[in-house]
Length: 137
Image (tube, rainbow, N blue to C red; front, side, top):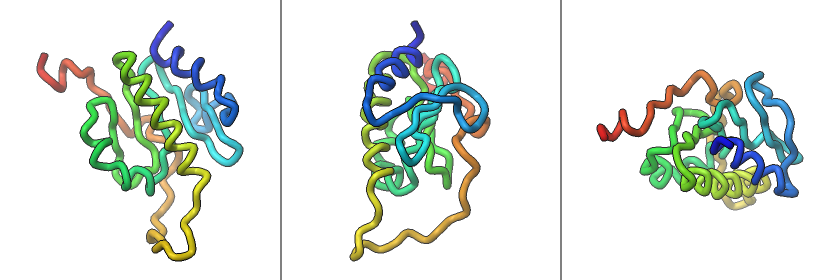
């Protein structure tokens, strides 16, 4: 069983998520009542709809992980699954994504300027290199 299959199996057991085809046309998706949250594109690559606001809030931590790939202006992050710890990271981020999709700005909170909507997930917009190629080891 691949890491992506293992993660998909674990997430399908979550009561807030339902499985179906990915709207981008490639792979399986898990969605909440409102939005698609996760796209499983291959045995190792997963796109997660974290939202722009959550990405901005977590940017420092996300950019420090070799498993996470950010696309400027996108509300999605790509998670490359190389080990079991990456699956755990994905599950933690899915929990954050579910929370981000449930919350709306409060009355006193400044609104973010509306940006043009990016088309769907990051599939075909991210090239993931094996970690050995990135770290040189």
